[in-house]
Image 1 (tube, rainbow, N blue to C red):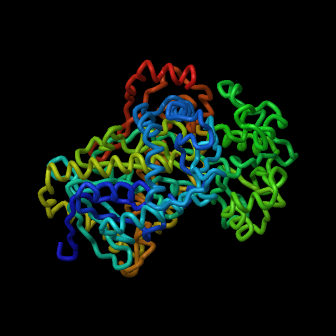
Image 2: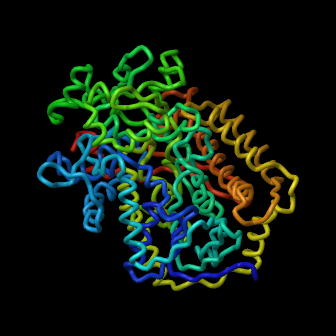
Image 3: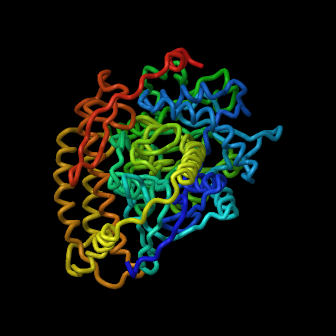
Length: 599
């Protein structure tokens, strides 16, 4: 304990992306003393990588848009698996959160008459994404970061949290360490908000950067909270595939929203072949009809098939590649050059233009992009109360990608950025209210803190032990091969068997050197969360014997009505991971009718 520095706050927010920043701002606005912890530097968050826009039914471009249409699109896109109340709250409150962000200084693109401009995106009936070119997430972080700092939020950068502390059956703070010095820090708090993002680094090919190791999912699981829907991992259909050094880097859906089309190696625009029956009335049946939507009256013409939901587009691309119609580097082509003039592309998609020019030596105003699917987002996460975002552990809240329920079996593009704002605000508000009402909890037992510190330092006692990087590489390999876009029973069982072996290897990892900026040590600690979230995904995927949304079972290609609106719940039972089925609350009759008949 002598090596552990202590801090005391009312609310502790773990994660400094959009959800964490918005939670911290709201908690501070309610009078709480707030600490914000980020694993990397403030401003380096995955929210920055969300380029296309934030979905909100503002109705600035299409007057007919409203929260009911947005709610219907979200539920249909999520294959009716969403927490309906979260989807409703999100659709109703997203416009106010966007206007609020604008009032705080966000510089959204404008229509000719000066209103916030909105672009089309996959799965959305109308043009709904408020955007700043293709740098929307960057603008959001700029504004939220400035607001949080001026609100007096105390920021702790380059700090990794390794344990959420639970005292008297409620969250009481967290234990972490500063990556620069290796020194441990104990944060006491009346409430804890998890806003740590996703789990993408459990796969080889991912749009996620090094921070996304499932920390929040593991922290909640370790604290005794329930998690849901971990089988639903979204593979974004468009990411760079060449050169190898940039494989997996995201290519925004905004390219397709602005008119980009998908072609195979034969030049065929193939998405027309993969139209699900339920969407046929909403999407174009011919290339001429699709082009008319891009350049003409979008209210009269039907959307291009490239704007189908991400699960549909990803599986279509995989099928084209498997059938031998892929590109030389194992992808397909995304072409906007033949559909839009160069000045338009540079104005609307400046980041994509520079990304391909600098990283792949491709001029997207002249040539097509070579793209393929990448692990992008997890719909599953901590089970939370829709109104407050509190988990099943009192005092522990979750918002953003680490929270489950909002997006169902498949997230619509653009819903993530507005999700961060809507539920980050709610988490911060309710965390502050709870902390003020209950006060700060008793101090954590010294034995528990000492045990966590000793466990974190154990790899230094085995300088010739297993290489943590080798264990991580083996984990990513098995998840990519056996728990990717298409799974089956045999592959998932092999995954679980391999994860068991890797867990044993992880117990024997060894580290040399000091605690200061030691990447081997950081990786050794990340293995706990990576192994846990991988096992959650594999167990839940094995349990769900159907295909629904982003979860595709090759041995069960159809959806099972008996599994509709039933979710797999993951929880820790001593040292064992358990799964069980749970029925979701029934949809209210008026909302069920709205979804079925249209808004």
